[in-house]
Every structure is written in structure tokens, then in C-alpha cells.
Length: 325
Image 1 (tube, helix red, strand yellow):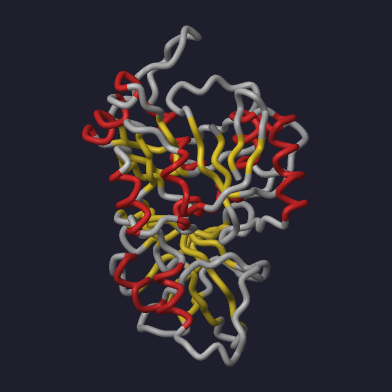
Image 2 (cartoon, rainbow, N blue to C red):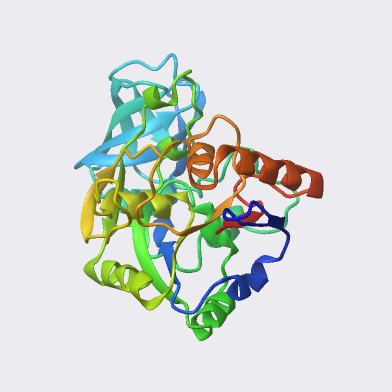
């Protein structure tokens, strides 16, 4: 779907035709985060099974994880992974099912997850018992963008999943530049909004990086008559986290920067570093949809979503996309 903010029109196309919707000297901004095998299974001494999600490594041999059915776990209780030599011991309990755990032996998380981890697919993706292929192997390839490079995400930046190497070659041939940024997608990106006032929603910090080379490519787009086209809401959050504060007088350049961001974008919001957005269709009561409302306007977004439902567009991670210009 292509949504035109200037006149409020909506048209239907195919993603393979994206080069025709872009302009020469546009800059496509891609999130090059790489999904890690963050899902794991563990077992209690009693034999009970748990499913876990690695969130981050807080120190040598210390992780922050999400554990399902962990309500009865106690500090000091030891669990074993379903494969590998490591054990994890409950060191503390956080909010919303999060736990601090210690790992023995205290090997790097990347080394451990390479053995015990599975692709962190969304829970609504099911597998038939007779699928006939290695779930791990295929999902590690499919739940990844073709330009993924920097490991660290526990969910894919799904707008980027539509791209193929061939499509990127055609986009480059059309005179469109690309810039790669990184935002490691965490569980907070998809956490449902459970408060009445969105401003009170607790945003989880997510690591990001904008290199000097990426900033230079992005900043060259507008002077050359091009647009900054963000691929996904994660790319938007990097761009806006790195944009100069122009104090309401217009758009400004982006600066090289790294750190973490808790930026929550909702109406009204003045975008400083984004002219167009490629994004999937999001669920109600999500910060992702709030960002789209801010960029396209509430009324136009609602009309676009009504058209998507009428036309049978697919939602969720492997669903269809819209280009908002």
C-alpha cells in the first residue's frame, strides 16, 4: 500500500515495484541489526519445563531473561538448559516476568546461545510436526533481513524482511542511496500499551548506533533533492534520536551517535529526519501504531487500515507493508 500524506490518497501496489515509488537521490535508511537465537528452554530440578527469552548480558556470567511460567521460581534455584553444559541460577526477580540469572560456566552469551538458543519467532507462528525441515536452520535464515550485520536483536525489524538482494540492486540502479544504522530490537518495542495515557507507557531502552558514514549519506539526501526514507519504525527512532534540535523551525541534520534510546513517538510529534516511511501493519494499543499515527495522521492512518482490512492485507511480522510518503 502507498499512502500519500499530501492529498490523502491510497493506492495498492507490490513491494517489488518499490523502485518506481522512490526518487533519484532518495536515501533509504536500513536497520542492520541481526537477530540472535535468543529463545531457550530450561528445566527445573523437579522436571518442570520453562521457556525463556534472553534479553541482555549485564555482566560476565549474568543475564537478564524473560521466563514463562516462572511464578514459583525462587532466588537460588538452579535450572538446566535443554542442551549444552551450562546451568543458570535465579539471582533476582524483576517486573513483568523478568529475572536476573547467573550462568555457569560464565562463557560469553553469544557462545552459549549458539548452542542452546532458538530463533525468537513470535508465538503466533506455529510449526506442524511433519514440517520436514530443521526449524532452527530455516528460521535462523528466514527471520533475518538480508542486510543484517550487527548481532543483538531479540526480534526482527520486520519492515526490512521484504527486501531481497535483487531488489536492493534495482533500488541502487535507480539512483537511490542507502545508509545503514543499528537499533537492537528488544521486547519493549512490541510491549502492548496498558495505560490510559500513552505518555505514561514505560519504554524500554534499546541500544542504537549511527555511524559517521551513515550520517553523511543521510545528510546529503535533502540538499540533492532527495528524501530520507526510513525502513521501519526502528530506523525512525534512530534517525529522530540523532536529529538536531531545530527548535520548531524545520528539519535539521543527523549526527553520528551511539547509546540507547527510550524515544516514544506519538501525536503530535514534529519529525526532523524522516520524509517517508516503510512499515508493516501494526496491532492496536502499540507504540508502533502510535508512531504511524504521528507520521501519517490519525484519520488517514485509520482509512489506510480500513482499506487494508477490506483488501485482505496481512498483519504481524511476516505481513504486508505500506509506504507512507
